[in-house]
Length: 115
Length: 362
Image (cartoon, rainbow over all chains, first blue to last red; front, side, top):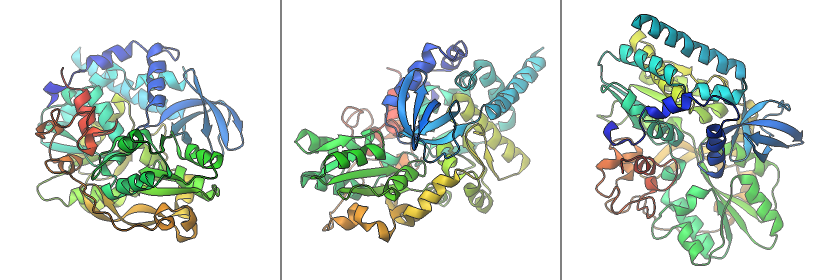
């Protein structure tokens, strides 16, 4: 089945070049994600300001009004995962770092084995 | 480095190579069938060529994870009938093109019906508020991720002219259905990350225990999917069957308690029809009786419509169950295309056939 796939692992390699927060790819991805209406899709955004049940959220340059009623403890400056206009959970950078550290460990072990 | 940059770390090629090497080592040429139940996972898998990175012995299959695809024809037919009666029908973008028994909401719209695409339930409520003389129906299709947003709006006392036609489903019963199909072995589940945000990972433990099947809640970057596969293989290797969490940066083990409370305040779980799969016990969220005024089914008296879930020749039910690959359907890319979908799996961005079609070698 894999032979019919157009985009191959090179997508991953390309992606590795784009790690800056302001990079075009992330912006474009977020913009595409926002304009799509896929129902289980949820995208990360930064809380700029909160006004009652709603917050202004920055999705890599695109600002949207988002309902934050499901996250009563949310604060400005935190990142949230947004689904159909509702923030459903906080993004926890420290957990992301832990997972990435695990990948780094695996990558180092793998390169160690090659040598 | 902010979270956005970290997000990119989950697309890193060097990490992908390392995790893939681990997957290869753990697979030991065993045939392993891993099923995911989320359209967004299929999108990540197909658009990043994840299958081509895996050893041949590992089969990665899309299960019933597309809300548009599993929305029963009777629900769409009801929405179409209400649009024909002159009411305002609002829904998510992908829903309007879903072919039903003899029409689609898009078709009705082109013939003059008031059908509007909204981004979320709150937009539908807003439309109702702005149009007090019109009945505004929100066709709510989705899983546990979407259901709390609808619950919130109903609990907030929307305008009287607003009602919800729920087609909201819970995923564990559908996973259990897969486990009971003879000749279709599931060796591991990648459970949907954003469903798990709401429910937590603990809800999958009974299934993992009962059937001895590892479950891992996965995120939606390429590395998330690869790491979920690695975690499943590690469980198999170690003889464990647990509900684990790969998507730790977002999913809490207990889920989101506020969302869960909204769900239990607004809905009862009852038997629900899934397109092509039939009725699954306790698999649908239906509004509690005290919210009858906002329940489209109770508000409008309907004579039963003879709905047809699967049109002649369509194999969507087999695609939804992961029993065949979309390319094996004789209609795929011929009678059934994204521009002119015949079956529901070719419609939306989460439909297995649509995703496969978009990622074909042209």
